[in-house]
Amino acid sequence: MIRPDISVALPVFNEVENLDELNERLQRVLNAASRTWEIVYVDDGSSDASFEKMAAFARQDPRVRALRFSRNFGHQMALTAGVDAARGRIVAVMDADLQDPPELLSEMLKKVDEGYEVVYAQRSKREGESAFKLWTAHVFYRLLKRWTNVDIPVDVGDFRLMGPRAVAAFRRLRERHRFIRGMTAWVGFRQVGVEYVRPARARGETKYPLRKMLRFALDGLTSFSHVPLQLATWLGFAVSFFAFLYILVVLALWILKINVPGWTTLMVFVLLLGGVQLTVIGVLGEYLGRIYDEVKGRPLYLVAEEVGGITAPSPDVDVTLE
Image (cartoon, rainbow, N blue to C red; front, side, top):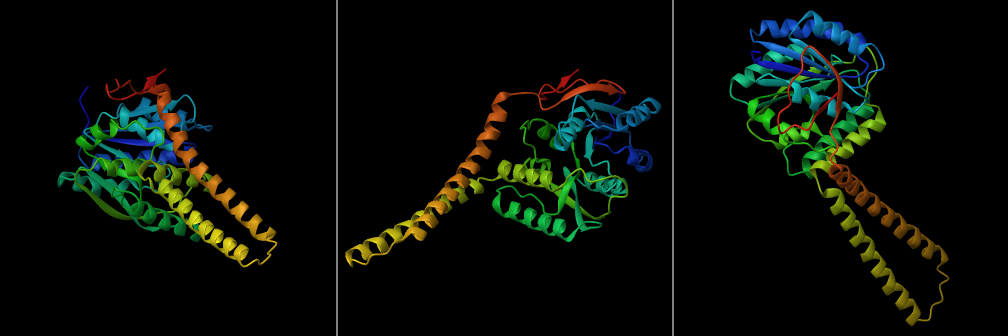
């Protein structure tokens, strides 16, 4: 089989309402680019007819492939599976909700032709999102950039193109708590951003409510920074310092024979120290849990079905096909 010039990998979770428009726009852009191409859809355990729709695309066009997970493994795992399965020299990853406009691929491909190995789409504006989500995203990306030793660009999602060297390097990164926008920054090489206005979601519901966003942010922070552990240490030193000062106060009052009942103060310090200890234990538990997940050595995902052809995985790729 002839290797396509570009593969587009898309994770899909209950996006049946968007797939017809997405597939049509993608094919129009790829055909206009005058390159050989393929589209790899990865169904992440959808409960609607998303996989049936993708399978129909694959049966109609041999350049389209559809993979279905055995269950929901998560957005980042589905993106990983798409990159693993991609045959193209260049691999693009993007979401299937149409908030990553396929038309931007043309400009991003020009940057690849200029010699950039990673081209990421950078959001200059985000339409249709609440002030709270915009503010929290703004704060998170800047804290992450400040607290890590990896230059992770701000206001950037997973929408990006990777050249052959970046793809080969990415496929070697098999950690289970994945923060792909950080992982692609970590591999290095020449990288550049292309600004765009992220449109509002036209159909369906967001797949990242607040709970998942917090978990995703925690994965990003713990995967690329030791600052939470350092903060726990600093917090312990600060509390110990104030406790030492209080000991001096108590000794001074004892020497001066000033009788102070101190019940309220005692309870405040007991509760404060207890809260600090539980916080530190929680931070340690987060890192320990990630170590536990890594040492189990389970596959990142399981593919239950593929329509449009079977791709032999790379020797460096840990993937199970059923």
